Image (tube, rainbow, N blue to C red; front, side, top):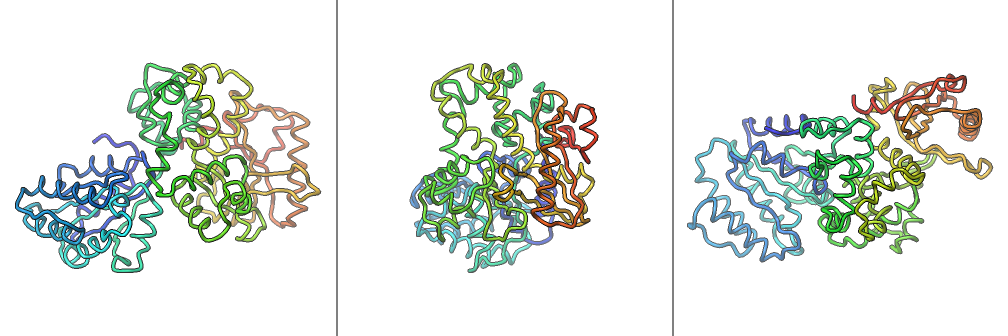
Length: 470
């Protein structure tokens, strides 16, 4: 079995397979994250039935595909279903004929199957509640890239499927540690610094990583995969959102609006930039993007829930929006040339901040506070504190606050007299403005640590790139 990472998810799925009762598993995660690969690697030889939805297929197309799989698995003795109730009734009857000890049924991309005004959910409800749940030998796994659809319509279903899910798995992107495991398993030579840069472009998406050519450098791979004419990922941004969301244009407008600001953006700003009314519709769109892992919703320190800020944390979306105009020039060696410019250094610093936001668990571990209750915020100074801003504030249950400064550098980072004074001013402004009674520490998050000098001694704690691989 060639599966990198996913230890927790594999354990859950194996437990469900070995269970002494029927299990109903909901597995979801964004496109290209490896959902189908995971299930097939574990159970393909044990599948009693497998069917997948068709992107943009009509109800008739979805049913035809399902009927074809039913006939292929069980022969031509089943009648062709004209609706989903009949389709699941056929599945019921035909699976009963199976002699397998554990009947593994895998329904992939069900949000595509459940076309508008179809009876798919009613059929699924009927299949599970009237038949499968009363048995002890069924493992039903439903899967979908549209995470928000799965959560809203299956996990949080208020009808017949309410509380019927026995296990749910949200499949996340690889961490840097898992990316390292992947590159090593594929014999792709890369330093941890280069892995971080790769993460800042592609994130921890297994499919994107699978496109790397071991014979090319990191920068050559980026050019091949994205900037060259006909590159595999040249249209991935639009394909990604159109595969996940029915009204994809609205989602893309929101993503592009949020991407214009590296720091958090308010609902009012999102509404104005995307031209989507600030109401229930915008709430649903933002919730879907947050559930799917593209957007981070958080509060400014000391602010109320209604003052939530939104930040784009999906690396590839951020990268595409920032560089798609360069891609349209079809410059085969754009990134190879761009990598030696000051603009690359500026972009790297910006992207590294987002990498840190997706590795908060590793940051907590490096600080030795994995078991301490924490809340994560950003903070902006008041008008009098013009320009004072801290993107990562960790408020700890042990009465300490870490103000995190994030710097991406190809060598040890040097704090000079001017920057040291700026750090002290930030800390002072935070303490005075918030009135906190907690101890306030400055934490530096860098690639290779701080160059030792009198000013580095003022820093309370340090986190380096290697800590993200622990």
